[in-house]
Length: 150
Image (tube, rainbow, N blue to C red):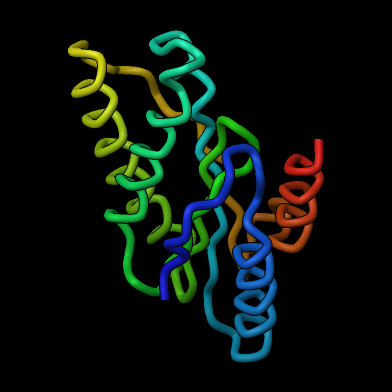
């Protein structure tokens, strides 16, 4: 089931946080993969007015939701960050999905601006299990909750 209800801009969906916690516990229990990622869309502010921005972010969320599997989740973190949860997905699998999603988002932005969008979309990614010693999914989720409150 994908998170499809529209969340207010700037708020991290409580259902997203709950689902991420459940998926992390499931991954730990059954030793399966889970990946959590944030796309930083702040660069898009330079292309749109404040009035245009909310519909643009809705469009970006729509593109992201249409680019993932039915078991994946998408939500906003603050006004400029798109958060994605990939259950049963390795870090490498999430990286591939994020490249594809990034390309689709750039196409959406190009359609809305009539300009070529070449910007690299900054990505933060955490996965379980992660032998690289990177930040844990649990720590990443706590940081996301903190960002959403501020």
